[in-house]
Length: 453
Ligand SMILES: [Zn+2]
Image (cartoon, rainbow, N blue to C red):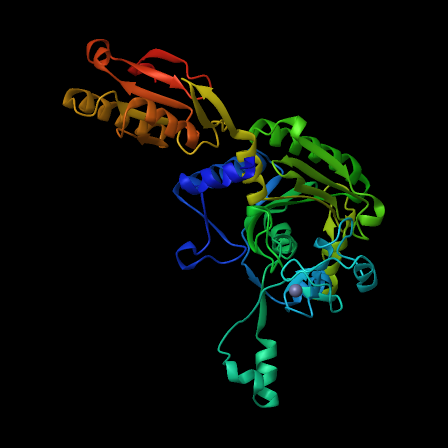
């Protein structure tokens, strides 16, 4: 088994991540967070929000609706260009993303380029391909009272059906740009300032794969940092350094597993003067963890054009008016979770057995403490342990109780879910009010007074 297989197996076994709709045979490209996964996810979201919003004076939160006015996606270019190259096998009619069947090509691959290589169909093995078509990845839906028969009905019914089409947002960023003016007009932030959003976005991937790295429904952490056009370069550098610090210090990712990729001009969006992909060394190879892009005034100018509203910012001190430029750091939650799990997953040797341990940073670990009585058939130990549990639960909230199996088995289970400390109540506790505290990473045990926990 590869390390990724080990992580997938641990995540299912311990209730971190389940395949979506598992009981009905699954739903491609969807994953569900189980009880432990939700705790890890919430800890990550809270860590991010606290770091980027609550602890700063220049960042503010936004939580926009998932279904937005379709003009949003016309203005942003998603309706026209948010597409992947789709190719269909003429023999078995399986559909694939063309650039993923050949090495070294991007989404802009042409039918001629594809057919020059002519790879075998992964499904039937034949090499009889159709032409590449652009497949728009936005999920569409109808909003309001539209019946299926409207689409084949009279012209006015068809028009009703057409005008009711809306999309699940393919990115969270547009929910920030569309709220920029409302924020400026209500809380009067001084440039530079950032608007931060965490939430779901949806992409109808042609072939979802790589576990939670490329799923159809995912969550994004996005910041749009609005700056004066003359200061974009230094603001970009500041945000870049701050984000790298965040990845290493708050998410526990090792610097040696993070690699910055300056995206060359020919691969950048036409409006961007600088983009960095921050790559992480995942178990199956290097993959994008997040990106930082300088997007000029491209988005706000598009909103201004499509809405007819003025997006200019007026400097309170100098009176200068300008459309702010934007630095956008954007990170996927699932990509971050897999990086955190990959970094934390270790197998080592303990008491002659292989031990699996998640060395999660304390701020991300689902439980901070596990409390248990040494023996569960001694009422006086159980009673004392319950009192210690109640005390820690009141203080730290994320505390779990375990009196199953023997103490060794309990340690192994807590190691696997990343609990930093196990607290054990034994007969000495009844005498001197001390407990054993065992450390997850070193397995070292120390005696500590209950009052000092
Ligand atoms: Zn085929």
